[in-house]
Image (cartoon, rainbow, N blue to C red; front, side, top):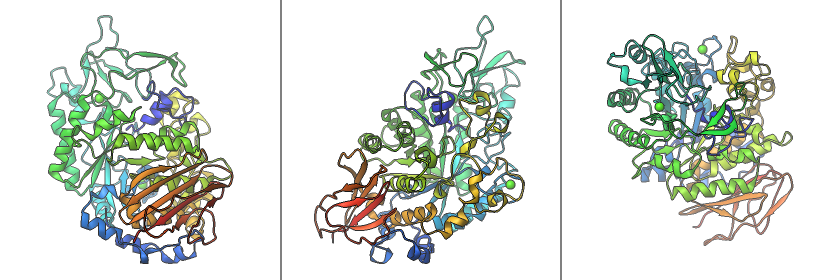
Length: 616
Ligand SMILES: [Ca+2]
Ligand SMILES: [Ca+2]
């Protein structure tokens, strides 16, 4: 559900009036598929006709995929992930809602883009109060998204194309329509009563403590029949499981086995930092700031007693052991929006036996405040590298809970150039990049214009300070036909007007499109040992140019990002050894062939250049 955290943290309960002014302020924070075949499937014709400079193509390159196979790295360390919000990706049956068969029908598109894995947000049976993050059956598919047979076919077809399938796992809470909760609320003596967090009212009838909900002012709902309150950090229709009950853990872990046996390749673990609550339910400290959009004088709270309790880490270690016992190739990606790197590091486990990839949201959270700023990005990545001490991480700029980065960083005039620049950064840092559907074509955030158009309940409650998350969840823009080729029916959210010009079909024809740049960049990454496995070192302190070196045995790559609207100069450092020459592997703007760089490099406004040298 909730990955909402960031919207939650930065908007619904954030200190800032706009969701995307995400803040990391703790007060509110709240292989590789070795897809040689995929590379080969890239259209070499398209590569040849593009004006993007690609001085070095595949023939002269070391075979990164073969090296990867020989070393048997964990596949997810080399993977480019692609998040799919299934409601909005592709509708196969005309009901206006995207579905699993729609995803399957576009796997060739994803293979050509070059992604190694998809992460599909929840498609389980659900009353859809929170668009699937309220699960009423963990081991099935909601009819509006398809069937288990459709899932099996999706996995089979994805694997045929060397694309892994990661699915969402909502551990913290169920739907109130889940049979577990129906049993639990039946009586105070029901065997499943203790599967959820129930408490008596205070003597005066008041709720058990002051905790607020991510989606509203109160995190407790009174069950009239049994006279007790149940706890829900999110919507009242999302009662929290009691993770202090070992039976809950055992049952939920079985869900992991169920999907791994059906061929899933891993899990993105929803809202894991909210698993545990303080046993004595102490009140959270109330902060001076009012909650944005509140009409009731509601104050923000420090989530001291219902977020990031240390017991969470014990569950993560046991979940990892369980996961590995079923399929050691399966990856666990933990969603936890936390304000500090030290807190995120705990999710790796005391001896790196926790989740494989604690989701790193710092690239989303920090630079959002200061727009495109070389110093900010340099310092965010420095903090990441310092904390990680060589561990692997993720990088992400957009997702289903945050306004799209295309317009977050765009200046209104150079948005495509800036999109290519930020993509270059995302795909060349030391970590696994996560793309969000549509970012590869430069989709924009399209927020509802009136409250009547809002579908996301949090937007209805806190309108207009928080317009909800519909803006980043609009239908994928496939072509210029009615409803952008997303559906032949009526789309569940309106198709943005931008779809007429900005769509997959149009961009595939344009060699300078954002889409073709993503394809080039992903192909470059795939063949580059330095980008896949190399170390990271920042270069220089230019306030306008963020530059860094990635170096692996046999190859050095230098990434140069001009984050300003002016021409800038950059002097590449001398290679440590070997031939003193760089080749431009990729550049976003300059169409001149610049096969070798001697001396100073002149950068166009918002230009990104990837230099490459190989020490033979
Ligand atoms: Ca459908
Ligand atoms: Ca919980």
